[in-house]
Length: 166
Image 1 (spheres, rainbow, N blue to C red):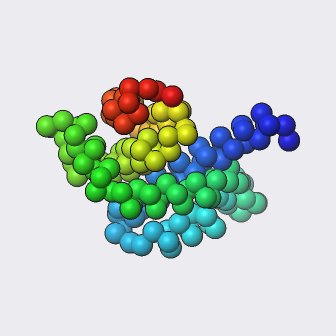
Image 2 (tube, rainbow, N blue to C red):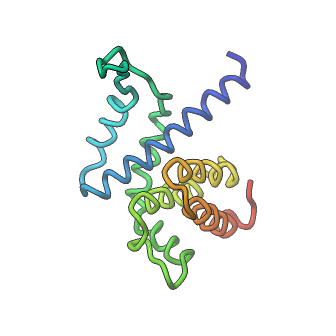
């Protein structure tokens, strides 16, 4: 595999990891559980779905893109470890009308992991992080939520990354 092909493969696996991290954090927020069983389930069992024919009989399995498991674990555990700091940063960016607690659970998960990545993964350009989480938001929302994700993460990127978007 050429370096360009490997980078593209890794980028897609990281995108899948971001989606899985958001879903894991959503689940953890809903059930207030431990991260390890949720991560284990996402890593071992969530990447295939049964395919049925028109009669409803199972004819096989469709596979999703396998997430970068190391990156997935880093994102979920990182958000959990730094959640107080992340929520404080988000509350400052959301303004007086909104708080992290008032956000819809999935939107809160998207923003938390996006902020974590802006804080902890300075090797990844802020523009890439913002675009990735806008894509995640677009997968779940069709109203103004993706624009909110863009606005909040863009605002925070300028603060957390000393005004640079790289």
